[in-house]
Amino acid sequence: MTENTLILRGRAAALALKRQDDAAVLEHLVDAWRQTRSERIAALVERLSKRLTVGFGPIHFEGRSFESVPPGCIELPLLLEGLLEMAGQATPEWMDRQLAAFLYGAPDPRFTPVLLALARLPMAREPEPGGTLCVLLGRLWDPRALAPLRALHAELDPDSPDAKALALTIERIASRQPRAMPPLPPELESPCKELESALDSHEAADASKAIVYEELLARVYADPEDVSARMVLADHLLERGHPLGEFIMLQCSSHVDLERLMKLFEANAALWSAALGPHLQHKHTRFERGFPAAVRLISRLTEPPLPPTQRWRTVREVDLASNALPILAEWLSHPHLRGVTVLKGVTPSMAQALAARGHEVRHLEIGLLQVRENGQAELFTHLGQLPKLARLHIQGALPLSVRLCLESPLASRLEYFEANSGAWTLVATPSADVTVRAQLRGTYGVGEFAQAIRHAVGFGKRALHVQVEDLATPEGRRLLEKAASGYERVEWS
Image 1 (cartoon, one colour):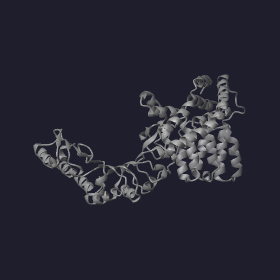
Image 2: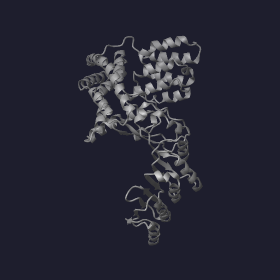
Image 3: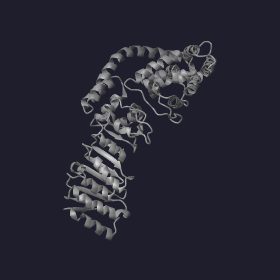
Image 4: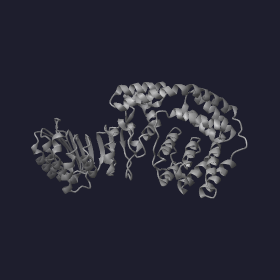
């Protein structure tokens, strides 16, 4: 960044400050720090960052590269906080993977306190992640790190590999520091003074507001169905200019400004979802009334998700993404997940584990593609042991699946049943006027389709709606008409 660019950055920060656009001010300050390495600007970055992340918890992330999509300016300190929170229980190998994720990021003063705290931990004496820590500190070349690193170096055996690596890091940082830091140009001095003054006045008020925020948030988590608690929280957040306040208000409104809602979602949803932990496909998180309501786990989990925090109390639907780790059944039984009543992407083995725990799932979506015919009877026995199950959706179904469901104790309490084979779909709603709706999707599945229709009469014979279009041959149509003869009324389309 040239001096002219630095001056432009200062002017941009001043304009953003006048617009009360704190996020833009933060980005301009971080860029200015990269040019100046000013301790004063670093302090402002950390103060403003703390204010902008009030109400957000640490973000725990899986080791991944930020080369193509670097972390956002507001997201970064929460990622670092999550990294520091896990450091005490993590293996050196795990920590090295996490640290390596930041190797592609631009320097930021908020790295310094976290990296220094990690450098003092015993695991930092391991070649990895100790080496990665030194690389990050060397690239950061923050003058504030010199004194703490020299103090740490003095505690080490001077002949140890750790001390030698740390000495090189210290030398690298020191060699890039001028003897005297130049004063800030007036274009930065003025917005710095304004921001310091504004933060001084805000921080005292923020301390009391933070207590109120935690109390209001606790009310939401205590009773996630209480919309009034969410609206009170929204009012409080709107007073502070927090985007979550407006988001809650818009999602609770009967007259939604969709354009504004999407802008807020695109700018903040990833951050709000990330607070639930690293084992989610965050782009698939669905929000309702301002909070996460439906989430999807990442595929091929090799370790259980972190224990759910109270932030999970608003979640009502979890897509397991066909993960079958046995411990997931225990994880789903956590008190903070007792509001989860919809489970998707469930495997047969997971359904059995959930049944053994008597999980109170009401809506289950399960895949049977790998289940042999002789294994389906046992599966429906397990499904019948889920005490609250009322809606069942089966992927990879056979006509046998329909019959076995009707022969199980589950049939008497199902409100909704859906079987999908790929070639046909059958939906049964016993209480509806049309009890069974069936659709043929391919010419090769007419025989199975007819069997499924014949079995489904057990859900209720008041009416059947069949959609075949021109997929059935005359012979196939006669087969279907015979299968439908047990219903009182048949509608064809």
